[in-house]
Image (cartoon, rainbow, N blue to C red; front, side, top):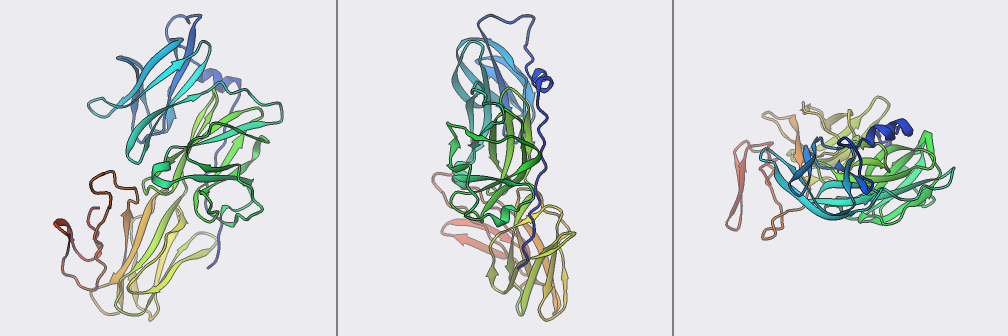
Length: 383
C-alpha cells in the first residue's frame, strides 16, 4: 500500500486586543460592579438559545460558533440551552459566576445525550514565549479516550512514531490542567488526535496556530459517522473557531460472484489502496481525504459502475461492490454508515441488512421477533 499524506484542515487564529474586544460586548446600558461575564459556545449541530432560568440571554447561536458575553451579577444560576421548532430545553446546568470572571458554557452531545458544561476562562496566562493548551473530549461515550500530538506542519499524522510524545493522553471529558507549549502561529503545529494508545488510529488531523501567552481549549466533537472528530478552538476570552475534519472513513465490502475486486482512492498526487479482496469480504475502514476519487477494478477485466455521490468530512462509508445484471459487470455503491452506539437501553445492539448478493430479488431479515428490513440489491436497511 502506498502511504500518502492525509488531507488536513488549515486553521489560523487571529488573536489580539481587537478580536477579544469584539467578543467582550456587554449587554444593557451599564455594568454592575459585581458583574461577571458568561457566553455560550455551541458544540452541537443545531442553533440554540441560552437562558438563565426563564430569561433569554443570547438568541440564535449557530452550530460550532459562540455567542457574545452577557453581564450577570455574581452568584449562583441555573442556565439552560433551548432549541428546535418548539424551543424545548436541551440541557441545563447549575453554575456559579464570580465577580469580574468569565465563564464559557459549552453545549454538546455525548452518545446522543445533550449536555452543558462550564469552562472557566480565568486561567493565569503563561509567561512570554509560552502558551497553554488542553482538550475537552465531548464524545468520550461514543469514541472512548483520545491522545493528542503536536508535530511539525511538514510531518505526517499517519507516520507517528514512538519518538512523538503526546501532549495529552487518555483524555475523557475536560482536562483539569493545561500543558505549557511553545507558541507557534506561522508555520503552525500539525495536531494529530488519535484513539488512546493507538498512534495509527487518526481521529483528527488539523493545523493549529497558537499565539504567544494564549490559553487554548480544544473542544472535540463527534462527526456524522461517530468515530472521527471535529474540533473547536476556544481561546480564553477570545475567538472561537471551528475545525472541520477533512477526511472520511471508507471500507470495501465485496459481493461479486467471482474474481477479485481492487479499490483505491486517487488524489492529485497519488493512489492509495482501500482493499484487494474476493467475495464475500468486509474490509476495514481507512481514512480517505475529502475530494479524493474512488477507483474500482475487477481482476478478470470487465466494467464497474462507480458511485456518483461524494464523501463528506467526518463520515463513515461502505463501498459495496456487487454483480451487475450481465456477466463481467459490477456495480459499486457508496452506503452511509452510522457507527454511533445505540441509545436504547433495552436494545443496546444496532443492526442493519446490506444486500450485496448476486441476486436481484429483495432480501428480508428478521432477528427473533424484530423485522430488520427488506431491501433490494445494492441497498441497506435502516439500523
